[in-house]
Amino acid sequence: MTPLIKNLDKFTYINRLYKFRPIIFEDIEDIRNWRNDQITSLRQKKHITRSDQIHYWNNFIFPILLMQ
Image 1 (tube, helix red, strand yellow):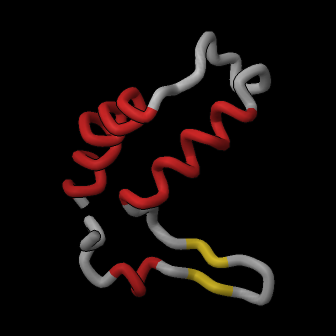
Image 2 (cartoon, helix red, strand yellow):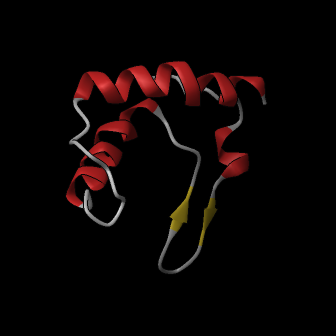
């Protein structure tokens, strides 16, 4: 998939232990799983479904990224 932000490498930071980069569409399933694994800590009432996650990212997160 094409990144939402042009020149994605410009926003990437790498050091010996970590790599930080903007979120891309392929990341959202991992994020959903991390959230569901921590449901108690995050005080969620229910597990997030794939369709919930896609809806949230398409309607709230990605539009913000496109504005930049």
